[in-house]
Every structure is written in structure tokens, then in C-alpha cells.
Image (cartoon, rainbow, N blue to C red; front, side, top):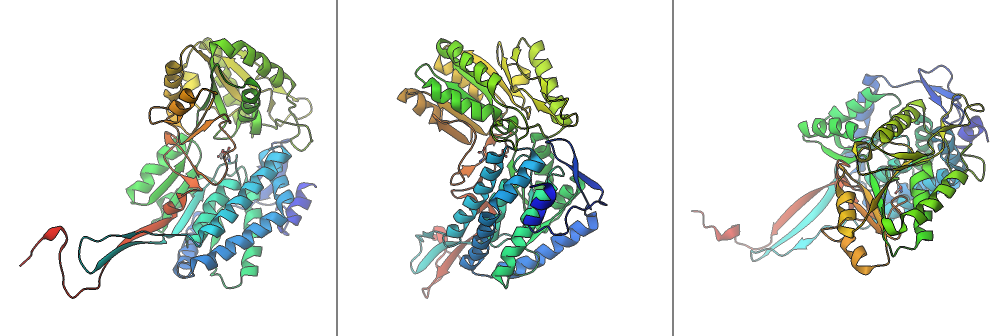
Amino acid sequence: MNPQDVLHALGLNAGLHTDGDLPVHSPIDGACIARLPTHAPDDARALIGAAHEAFQAWRQVPAPRRGELVRLLGEELRAHKQALGRLVSLEAGKIAAEGEGEVQEMIDICDFAVGLSRQLHGLTIASERPGHRMMETWHPLGVVGVISAFNFPVAVWSWNAALALVCGNPVVWKPSEKTPLTALACQALFRRALTRFGDAPEGLLHVLVGGRDLGEILVDDPRVALVSATGSTRMGREVGPRVARRFGRCLLELGGNNALIVAPSADLDMAARAILFGAIGTAGQRCTTTRRLIVHESVADALLARLKTAYASARVGDPLDSGTLVGPLIDRAAYDAMQAALAQARDQGGTITGGERLLADRYPDAWYVRPALAEMPGQTDVVRHETFAPILYVLRYRDFDEALALHNDVPQGLSSAIFTTDLRESETFLSAAGSDCGIANVNIGTSGAEIGGAFGGEKETGGGRESGSDAWKAYMRRATNTINYSRELPLAQGIRFG
Ligand code: UN1
């Protein structure tokens, strides 16, 4: 399927605009696959206004009925899984299995949200006063602004949108300007779901096509109750305080610098497989990518030998060819950042294997690399920094406390893992004194989380939680209600007044 057929299958019948001001390039070969018209700032404000109006009606629709819309969206995603996965590959460069996997993640969160639509529970709380009852009620919050990144161009939107919609909130979505086509495809699928649903208010989902200025409008508009932003720590540092200044809510999912500890008792076969998927999968462009390997000196040589063999033979190339494990980097800037990080790693005493550009003859305008292993003498500056590329820094350790200290001694706190069969080590890793990340795993890798758990991390990762568990609470406002069914008016704390 070429891009035109894929878009047609997804209901983008207008095809590829050729006259817009935003060129969209496929990282597979660098070709321009579309030119989209962008939204002017005033259009964006008007769309936020329309969403705000939709909120007035949507918040009064019973939550299980709102769930029905998300159920229908899930059906559209099931029916179009292959085409949308293909478009993810074309626009973001993911291998086919990961493109489709991303759509599966969308389907899963829709299923989750449908169930959730009947479980937006509050508590009933014992009152200290006779003839009184306390309870909490969860109400829809308002327009949810979603700012998403190129690397999960559709799944991260769906985590937010599926929850926001069942919670009673319209969504205004500013996708990465590198991946607007997948966003328009989601919007088209959503429209189909809306048509089948019947009586939803207009304006439940808007997509803003364009650059950073549109994101800033979402950030600054007081009608946007929650800004859920995924991207770099630099972006989050700007978004967080700006939203806070207007007392809006923010959900930040920022950089990771995820480490995997391999202890002496680890199953090295399993560890090697997990490291490979975590470090080179998605060409190192997941926020959960394994970026640091902290390996016990007794098993380091054996593990590194396996990894070097696997790295050398991992097929890098067209992500749509079966057998390819590593697709392209998103663009030249990503390649340059990777090369700069490798140069720094060398300066800081590192020994690098791989990292070179590949397939430049065949794809002069695309950026394929051999994933890199960087054996470091310690946790130097470059290791503490997130470079969004397939570089795995390798650090050796002698005792477990040293490994834990190294593990936590970075500014980011998203995902983490330990491979060990020693109960004391694994429990310590999961304990209050263990990994300081939002995600901590035992005998599985750092990436590829299921949607059922809350997703997000601490420190410079931003503290937000999306997706499963009770992450829905970020999308609602809580009211505490005290009801007096007695004929007296006792005050709390036993206060007598007058
Ligand atoms: C991201 O990279 O922004 O856990 C999200 C994972 C995926 C989501 C990654 N389920 O790797």
C-alpha cells in the first residue's frame, strides 16, 4: 500500500494535499508525502471555543453512554489496524510489527476506558456528625489539550483521548508537526465512530495542524482545563510553569534515562533479549528505551559478547521489510544529536561499537544507523543526558548498593528494570529504597508497558500518570459532598458558635 492508498483506506478521502505549508516527510526515504495546510492561531482559539461548548453538553451525557462512543472508536481501530499501523510506519518509521502494536495499544486503552465508563467511583466516607453522610463525586473536568510526540504518534493520544472522553471531556490535540497525517487519520476514524454513535455534540475532537505556536495556545488558554504533554524535559519545563500560572492542570510525560541492572544470578539469555528490544527497538526512540546497562562485572563480558553479536546482526533498513528490526531515525537532527552524543562519550572515556550511518547510498535523505554500545568508565555527563537515539551506555558494577546508587543518580525517573533471580535484590529494587522511577520491573525490560498500569515517571520525567490504574482521576474534578439529613446543624470539630 502506498501512502495514497493507506490514507484512502483510513477515510482521508481528500488524499494528500499538495498546496499546504507543512511538508510531511517519511523518514523511510525522506520523500515528501504530503503538504498540509496549518491552522492559524485564531482558528486554534475558535476550535478550543467549540470544544468548550461541546463540554457543556458532553459532561451531562451519562458516562456509560460516553463509553459507547469509545467502544465504537475501538471498533474502528480494530477494523483499520493494519492501515493505521502502516501509516505509523510511513510517517514515524516504525517497523510494521511496532506500527501495528501501537494501534493494538490504542484498542486496548479503548477497551479499558469502556469498562472504566461504569467505574468512575467516588468513596462514601463516615461523617463525624450524626445524621450526616459524606461522599465524593467525580465530575468531568473540561477541555483536555493533548500535545504528543512523533515517536508514539497515535497511542499516546489514545491513552489521553479514551480516558478524557469517558470522563466527559472534549479533546483538542496538537500532534507533533512531524506526524500530522496519523493524527488526521485518527480524527477520520473518530468521525466514523461519531456517525455511528448518533447524537454526540459537535466539537468533541479537534486536531491542530502546525507548529509550536499552536501548542502554546493550548498551554495559555484558560478554557483548556488539563494540558497533557508528552515530549522533552525542555518542553515540559516551559509548559509546566505556564499552565500553573493560570492554575490549569498539567500532566507531563517527559524524558527518560532508563536503566536495566543485570545481576550475577540473572538469566543472561532473557536479559540479552530484553536489552535488545529495549535498546534498539523503535530505533531507540521510545521514552522507555533502555539507555543504560548496569551490569555486574562477573557477567559483563559474557553479556557484552552476546550483545555485540546481536547488534552486529540486527537488520537495519526499510521498516516495512519483514525481517527489519531497526528502522530509520526520525530526521537528520536526530542523527546529528546521536553523533554529537557519541563524540562526547568518546571524549569522556567511552569505547564505542557501532553508531555509524548506514544505507546512505540507497537513502541519501534518510537517517539509518547501526545501534551503538558505549562502554563507559563511569556515569559521565553524556550518560546522564537523554539522547533520543539507539545508544546503550554500559556501566559495570561490583556490589548491589553501587548499582542502585548509579541507577538513581540521573535527573530522569521513568522506567527501570532488574534481571536477577535473587529475591533480596529484586525486592530491594522494588522497595522504597530501590528504583526511584515510576515504572520498576523485574526480569522484563524497561519498554513496552501494558496499558493497564499507570504510565509515567518522577523527577525530570514530570510526575504525570497516564493510561491505566486510576490515571483517569487526572481527567476529572473531585467534589467532596457532605449531606445533612438530620434536623440539627452540628458543626465539625465540635465547635459551638453563638
Ligand atoms: C513513549 O515512548 O512515549 O511502554 C511511550 C512503552 C509503550 C509506550 C511508550 N507502551 O514503551
